[in-house]
Amino acid sequence: AEVRAPRRLVRQYGTEAPAVQDLAARDPRLAERVLPDHPVTGAELVWALRHEGALDETDLLDRRTRIGLVPADRAAALDAVRDLVGEVAADQR
Image (cartoon, rainbow, N blue to C red):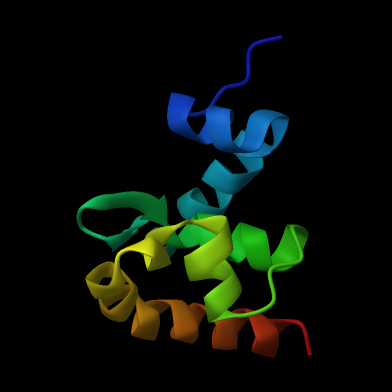
């Protein structure tokens, strides 16, 4: 069966790709890229926190998205990622 979502999301998330895409559709902020030159969106970070067991910004940046492999990219994304981590943690309380 064909999964209805962008190819990049399907490669990354398989059959869960439409659910990741739906997060972005419900909250336009999550549709935005974490960094202009990197394809990862806020929705992907929220998905990792809520459904994949990501623990914190280090987990998201260094292990899940690989944004942290480039120190300048890591520094540029850190505040936005930290904010998302805080929002998701607050939602789960």
